[in-house]
Length: 342
Image 1 (cartoon, rainbow, N blue to C red):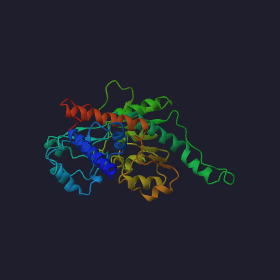
Image 2: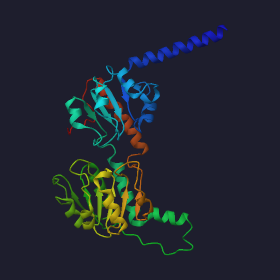
Image 3: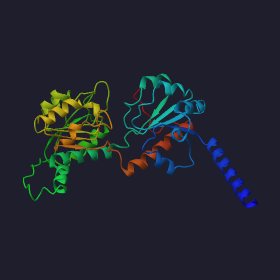
Image 4: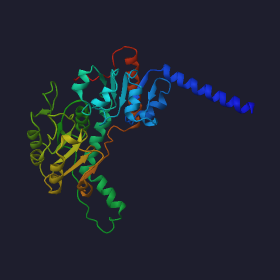
């Protein structure tokens, strides 16, 4: 009996110690949670007290209210649809939002600026991985890699020897929409294939050897491949429309590793079905994870699950970057990767 009581006592003391430690650590509210969170929590278990609404029996609203005065930092995933004014109203002490995304189109920037809330984001952390994915998708579409895989697995090779010819990547005229860090990394990789690079961007880049076109229609008219690398804004929403795709031509290929809504998805599907463009490699879609069913039947389309950044190295790197930003914030030091464009 005494041994059982001692064991219970030790468990209670241990639980109280953990709770006390959590209260002493800086608090970070987590919504989503981000895909990187499990890696973050396992790598840095004693750095912060992570507040996890999904583990609570309280409703989200009740949970937020209970931590309203103490929550200064919020960690969110790349895409979150619940970070609205009602959520922010529950968090009057909030001073920092860390998003695991390289883009910020999922955030209401004017509102956050008005509330004096700083933003930290992934910055250029994912650029190389995303560029790798862009080139991989392009090779897959041109050389029918995924289509060929299906052909072999379905055991069609012995009975249907006439498999469609692919297209050569070397020497292709490539148009890059958005020559930021990711766009530069894509261009650098494709130069190794002897491709000729052109680009469209907000402004002409100084000291860049590539041809510049001030609008995407003109760019498409002079290219065989369009690779979408720009951010999603009001200006870039549906910037790749039917007219641009028709300018690209019947053998033209579109690769999108940016945001789904940069392309008018309905018009793209129509162009693909009617063979007005040659193919597409898509890592992103307008309404994720819902994908138009028409795309499933098109053999000249390669689909990916918004996975361009999902490498082991990205998980580890983003976890480290989140911790560095949180440590800087709670030490009253400048953020490591602040978003400055708002």
